[in-house]
Image (cartoon, rainbow, N blue to C red):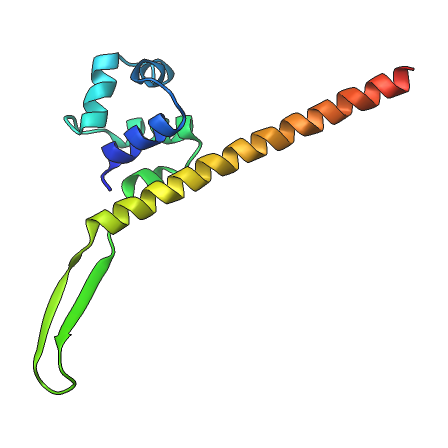
Length: 129
């Protein structure tokens, strides 16, 4: 999956608009939209900024995680035809699932923090009685 596709997917998973992202990155909406469409070369500094917004490592935006697929068709003797290539659909789905899992883990951590804060409030209220 290309960097601009990852950026768009992560933004959508956080349910942010392009306007939200442009504001977080201190840039125009048009400029940000070009990033998502892959119509502009993004500097490493801008990728670092985007990674910080998503609270991820910049390498996660750079790595396209393409995995080679090797298929051998033939009998157990000498008649083989080898095909070597990339299965982009599987790689893209795998990346989407990883991002979704990461997002869900962040939500879970947020809920755990809220529960902890509420327990502290309850404890303070009980001690005040």
